[in-house]
Image (cartoon, rainbow, N blue to C red; front, top):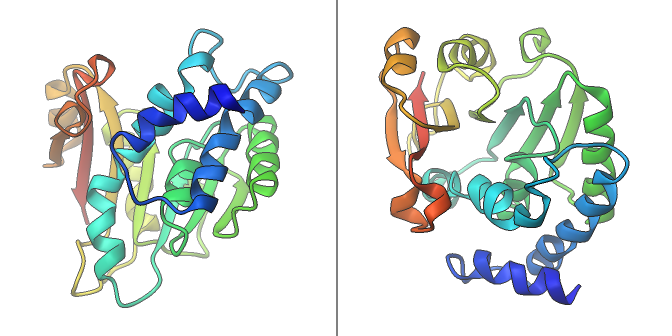
Length: 220
């Protein structure tokens, strides 16, 4: 646990207001993912030792958009993470926002087995999990869709629109898609026929890994 605590310093370098329980949950992720990765390859072998930078901190960059929304909302916020894989960005965000409801979805059942186990082990009470494709969800609407590089923006937006609520809390941003992307996005954005707000993650976390990595927000 000592090594995990040392790695956790990368998170606390940029976020200083975690509760003791949140820090405990974040610290538990390192040994849990390493143990699971020996059985199911949910994280690239070359990335597992960079879990806090390449997966957790990367996921938490979305908090730059969501934090003022969660703080200002007068009602409960529902967020769906489509293509969550091993639980990113959903699990780190659910730890960060204990009062926001997160629904983690993926079409690959074995990865969700890992997600379910980790959610139960660290006692995340604000997470539900569903084994399905995003386009099959009909019964529920969400304030935001989040995703991390699972498909081109055009596809993500096509899947997201039917999932989003029609109206917004007047005190928050309009319902929309918030996704993490990297590299030159000019062609991908043009092909998507969207006009996303683009934020450079390096401006939030000036670490070399985050150069040419972005948060995209597309409003309904």
